[in-house]
Length: 113
Length: 109
Image 1: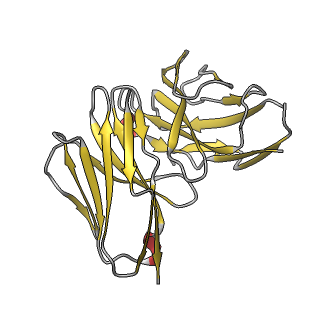
Image 2: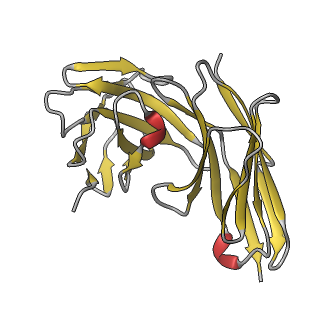
Image 3: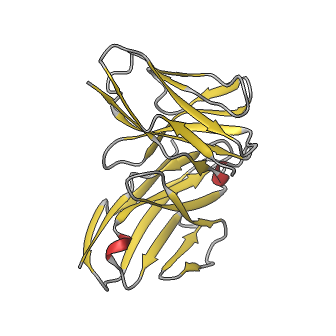
């Protein structure tokens, strides 16, 4: 089955710890994206990557880092510099330069205690 | 600055009512307008609109785009409790999609 997976579904961390969220896709998509969603709000773009070994900051990149070493994988690290990391994180992938073809993963809910 | 604005932010109706959700956008190199339904998990795709004035329909849901006024609406007729969700509007450019804050729809029995 083709799709996009995120793990874990729920994640708890202590304040000050870095944490890495996984995103994997087998749709053969070139582009991948990370969004953050806070309660009652829409999706805000953190980072996106149109091709392997290249990525761009979105609107709220501060306190986050990414890598794109493989086409299938786009992990997101939430660093201790992110002041309010508790949120729902969504990963998506699409055809290159066609963000309107995005498929979303199931999301990871991160809670920082 | 690119932006997408949805209204209302919250709406409570009773089963059987008809609702209209609004979305205005300003996005560089606009390509398409998308509507999603979100129920406590990942958004699910409803419609993609690229041409003005052409209504898209799926059951009780319909949507239309006005590229001159930079506006789209999503209509839901004969609402059901299962329509309760957050409805997200997104405008696509070349590199990314800009999302609105969403409209939280609650349908009461």
